[in-house]
Figure 1 (tube, rainbow, N blue to C red):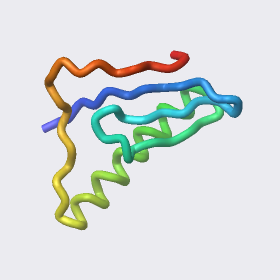
Figure 2 (figure 1 turned 30 degrees about the vertical axis):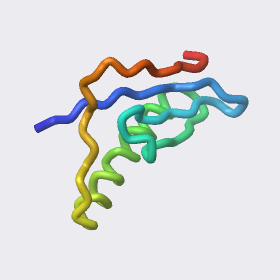
Figure 3 (figure 1 turned 90 degrees about the vertical axis):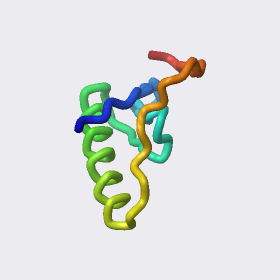
Length: 73
């Protein structure tokens, strides 16, 4: 079963920062948006592997009416 997460990308001085809103420990940076997206996909895969090895529950997408603040998208 695939889990979809919401990613937030913020322009920084050095490129872009990407973070999952539902799993904020998954965060990365890239020199451009394309690299940041690729790095975020890799970070998700690594976090899922680490959580499984530690028998920790993988966060699921929250289905509520939360309001998130977005930076410079």
